[in-house]
Each structure stands twice: as structure tokens, then as C-alpha cells.
Length: 558
Image (tube, rainbow, N blue to C red; front, side):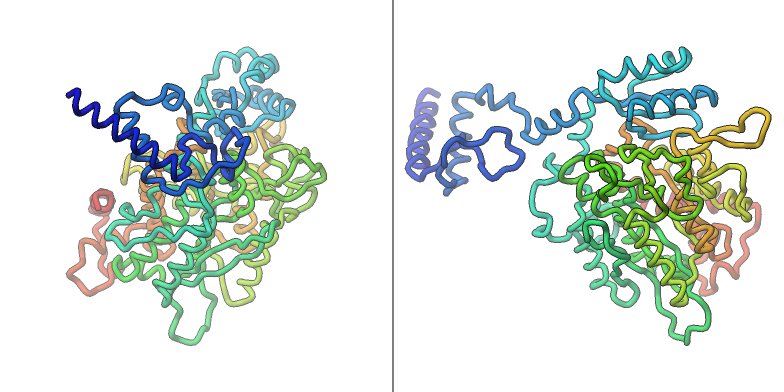
């Protein structure tokens, strides 16, 4: 044993001399690393032989143990995160009355706090530890005792949510090849094993067009404030017959709020799933024969880029406002239908700032102009699915008010309930169904029919605009996982499960639009040996629910 140790020591000494002679400094600071806190005081020799350096260090650590300061040092990027989100946390307030909600909304506005989620039951607020006491002092006693801490250490939670190496700015994304493999299961695709930056997403979308040129087309919706493309793909089989009527189109959009990474990756997941299922699943094949689907994964490219490289929790666009130090607009509050600048939070520093006029956000104007141009080119929009996070809700128009019901309210509620049920039967996740106004306005004031704003205004929503202006009468906003354990910092392990449950939801949605009330794809599976279309083979009414449940469970096991 002594001989072995002596040999290892001699080897480490020899390696030290070799690497020193080669000009290798194992403890030097990388001068060009933007995430390194300490800066070098003198020029270091380049690392010429990294393998020898690693071999030398490993040998020394094997004999003498890991250096205590090296073992305890956190990753450099974690130090940066701790400085950025130091002593921040997320609180949940269980709200039960309109008075409590009004008091909380007023307090949040006065302290300029970041509201993460608001439902009929709770409101999640991000704040600094030093702001907890001032906030509680502004609230009624009932709210002070009905709050709990969801995230105790926000910096650590942000770090855990980052890509696998813990540094979203790890490399130049333009040099990264799209991660795409052909596999029988979407869950096996490397692209969906982690969150992907904007440049990789664009290259991936272009690759989809190259792989499936007959029914996939890469398009650009418009330009952002910082002149980035708003990328999208159109999926659908062009008709061989002369065009005699408008092509029905469904829009699936994500990434309106930059920090909601799961919405962007879920749009990509849906696009890949529908593309690869064409010609294999009869219902999807029929859907893409009759409808076009436009997938817009990053509606807010400037904000998404900023969330990857500067502030993981950035929400708005990056457009300049009338206050130089408060940039950005809430993209989902700047569309023209029922834009309510008279009532919305008019402070540019607010996370819900909708601008000084309708369509002030460049990205909203570009999306609206694209949609109008499409209608002039024989396109008829039938639905919009706008993905967000978090809180697991399926929300239908209108967002701006609860005092006006959409004309096809019963159909919207029926389809939303079916979507929620398909998700629940597939994997047990519960999504609630509500009007989008319930997330923005509260109950009636006593003695009249007027509604008043709650945490933020509901006017200027893209869902309302597509529903009313584009006549897309099956428009929804779906808030994805989870219900607060991680919030916007959903771990990568949830990418595929979230994508699967929304893929099930979208198949039900598409089947409903085909006129089959969500059951055609179920009957198809039981008629694979019959050449007749499933909608021509009636399913007995008593067996419909059984078939529905069985098929969803089968798909979950695939």
C-alpha cells in the first residue's frame, strides 16, 4: 500500500511539472467568463493541455483529498443568482371575500410587488423578506393569518430550474445544433429533455420544415421591438382542389410572458406531436386535411431572450416606455378589443402595464396585422389556444368583463369541460374551467351590476381580440402546470408530462371542431381493421364513456 501511494505521489509530481512546463494553471480565473465574480489581476497562460490538467488534479485529489475551499464553492452562476434574488420568497394568500381581494390588490399596487398567480381562491406574490412586514401591515387581520410561504429561497429555486449545466448563458446558442432525433416516442426526443433557447427553437422549427416539406411551412409573424423574428410554423395539407372557401385555421401560441418557459416548450411539443402523428392517427390526419394549425412558440422573443441571459423572472416585453428605467409592456394587455387604459394600472413599472394606447406593444401589433392579412388571403380563424402558466386553468372569453357573456357560451363551456376531463382521465391532473374574467374581476358590488377590477385588468387580452375581431369562436387561455409548488420555475422533468396532457387536450379540441364532440378518435382505435371512417360507424351511447376512458389510458402508456 505504501508503495502504491508513493508511486501515485511521484506521478502527481511528474504531472505537475509537465503541466507547469506547458503553461497550465489549474487555479487561474477565466478572463472571458461573464459569470465569474473574481477578475484576474494578470494575464494567464492559455490552457494548452486540459486533459493533463484534469489528470493531474484528479491524482492530487485522490491522494490528498479535495481542497476544502474548492469543495465548498458554489457554482459561479449561483452566486450571481443569489445576488439577484437574495432574500426573496413567494407568499400565497388565501382570498375568500371581495373585500380581502380589494385590500390585497391595493397593497400590492402600493408596494409595486410582483403577482405570480391569482385565482378565485388564492393570490401568489413574490417579494423581498423586508417587504413582508409592510405588506401584512396593509392587510386586514383575516389575510394576515391566511398566508403561507410557497418558495422560501427564490435564488435556489431559480438555479434548480435552469438548463442542466445551471447556466442559461452557457454558450452561444447560434452554435448549437437543433436537438432532434427520430424516435417512436416524443418523450425520447432530446429536444424535450430540457428547455431550449430562442436560437435553437428557430433552427428546430426550420428543421421541421425541411423534414416534412409537404405539410409544414416555417413562417415569420413579424418583428419584435428589438427586431427579432416572431417565429412560427404552419401545419396542414394544402388542398389539391381549387380553393373555393376559406381555409379554417387554429392558432396555438405561447411565450407571451417571457418567464413562462413551459408555455413555449409545450407549443413546440404540440407541433412535433401533431406533425409526426399525421398519417398515423386517423383523427389527426383528418384534422390536418381540413384545418391549418399555426404554432407560435415565442410571441415575445425579446422578453424570452432577456429571461435566458439576464433575468429569469422577466415577464414583459423589452420595449421602452415613458420611464427609462421601467421597460416593457404586458403583451396580453395591449390588444385593441376593450383595451381599458382608463382603469388598468397605468404605472410603466407595473408587471401588468398595458401601455398608453391599444397595440402600443410592437409584438401585439405585428400579430394582429398578420392575422388580418391572413383573413384577406382566404383564411378563416376558428380558434386560438393561448398557453400560459401557472395554476392549471382552462379559461374562455371574455376576459375584460363578467357582465357580458359570449354568444356561444354553452359551446365554450362544453368544450372546456371536455378538455379538462380528457386531461384528468389521461394522467389525473385537475384543470379547472372558468371564464377568463374570473381572473381579472371579482363579484358584483352590492346594489348594482357593476364589476370592479381585482388584481389586474382583463382588458386588451389576445383571447378576447381573436374571439371578437377574428371571429375565432373557440378561443381559450390555458394556464399550465403547476398549482404553486414551483410556479414559473417548473423543473425540466415536467416538460414531457405537461406536453402529453395538453396534446390529449388538443386532440379532444380538434375532434370537437370536426363535429364529433371529442369521440371520433376513440371509436377509430376500435375500428382499425375497418376501412370506414369512424364518424360513419356510430358508437352506442352507453359505450362512449367506456371507450373514451380506455383509449386515453392506452395513450398514456405509449
